[in-house]
Length: 98
Image (tube, rainbow, N blue to C red):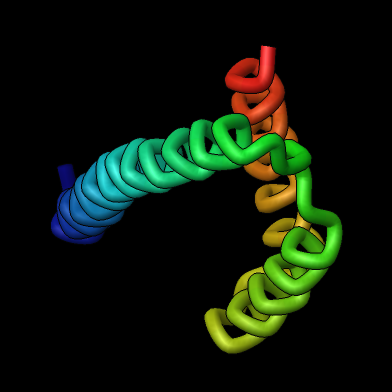
């Protein structure tokens, strides 16, 4: 291998190692988030509150879009990601109400 190719392979490995660490952070962070949303779902079920809160969801999406802009992340991607998470949370909340 030439020095250039060896250096490129080293940089590629560094990027991949960072991606792997960030993936682990994302998974553990989502796990923590879902622990809290499960608790919210149980609380809502106990107090006969609706499983979804459209005003809160809209505020969260706006907040996430702002964060995405500041983080140089595509806000549409961030919105899709949060909508996916919200849909999963609402499904969990509905399960608690059954």
